[in-house]
Image 1 (cartoon, one colour):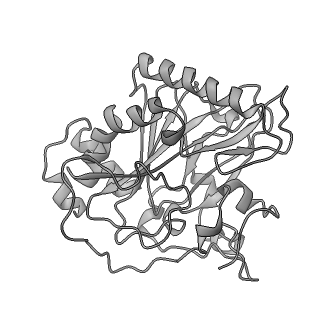
Image 2 (cartoon, one colour; image 1 turned 180 degrees about the horizontal axis):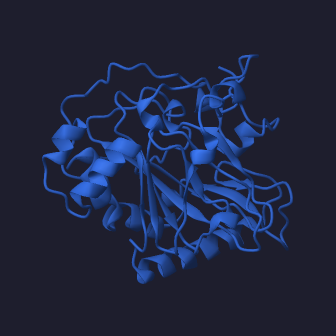
Length: 301
């Protein structure tokens, strides 16, 4: 559906003003959108995942570890496909208010694409360089969005999600370097055309929700504070959006599942082109590993 089509349907959660802001700026911040009960359930589940990571000495397909990770002092960068690791994560993605929020922005027929939990550990948790999501997982249209849930209170020192307002309306940028390696971030020469002093930092108490369109330029700084910044991310699309390429963090059980409304009989194709990423089917660790150009990360087509 087009933004005009979406706006013509009465929203379930958001106001019309919030929907107009999203389509104009490419993002939203909803403070205290998630109940304390849900936040606590997610925290309890996440603690279990951290305990599991203590047995690992190196990253695998599920746990992406910081180089300083040890059994005594676990430091995770990412938990991939959390919906497959514990039923509470899927219950949250499918049954909570999140899918209703997505429906207010992509239309009543909503499809789940993937999930991840980015930790940004205390005292040095890795930065995420400026990038656009959709070139990691191209679709037939640009309805996909990502909804992030802050599990802790987040201030500017913790490396909150940072966005370039309105950048979703512009072009998509190369995320390969000059040698043809996929680095998953935008080159400094391209970023020079943006005023990065006019970035919006999305901060808020635990239970706050961030939403950003798949074309929006975004990133986050290192966590310089003594507090962690776990951000649970769930990506959704309109039901008429279909992926072109292999999903690098695919959930065999849930990717492509319709969580609101009905499945689409027709695909909708946006005429704007999209950069195609490498073939991820042989393996993928995380955006962190790619941006840091770690040796274990596949980075060529």
